[in-house]
Image 1 (tube, rainbow, N blue to C red):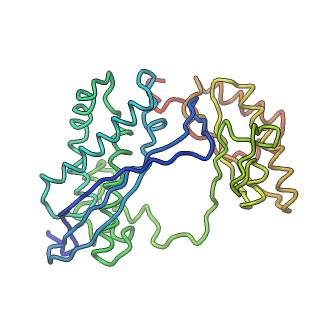
Image 2: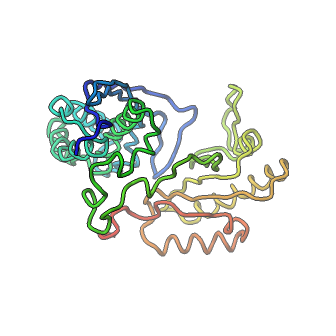
Image 3: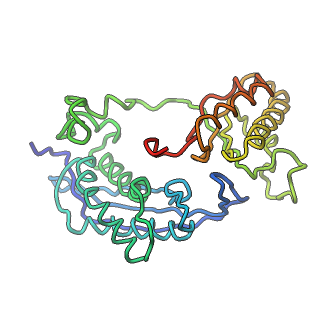
Length: 318
């Protein structure tokens, strides 16, 4: 049944922004010194001709979204931006009203074909994988939800219920989700406060001894300085995944530096996550890493809340 809250896209645009990093960032065995943002704007119209403009933005993120072993990061970035441009052009032939989830669901049926076209035109030996496709298309998804919330004067997260959606989740997933809607899996009110993880790249300076030259731009230069300046309690540690001794020592060094800084600010509780970006060859590497960290510092081990992406994302093949 048509809903008065349904929208259709009447206009869309895409722009790109390039941002250099203050210092190089190493993760997943690769070093980045810049990133590109994909920005999209969409104008929507309701059945009663109300209009609103929504905005969505996402870093291309080719290093983690498409960790190719045969293509360079520049090649995968170019392919993902070309994919974004193709996706926004899909709107030209789509004039239906609906909920943002349904609109994107229908458009996504063309993602694989669009990825193949991009690969052929750029003469690549790989087609952009599904994750890279979803990342490159996500600004459109975000912009559409933003516009939908604005035109209906509602928090878009509160528009994920049966009242606004034409189909339950079984349409998009499977029969296990019959009768369920996305509002069951999202909060109705935002959290007033959540911890923020500060990323510690594999090249980030922990102490002055790690600096070749201080950057005199008014910002901290070392991890200890960042902890004191921002009151950090959660650190996300980027590791290599193919050098066990280095990974273990990196965590122990960070724990030592963090302990000194936290003592200065009177903080007795802080936490870590570790991120290998899929570089660990097997589970044994991860277990050995944890055992050695615990041997070196039981306190550092206890502060590790979770381990992110230790092995390859394709678990069936690895």
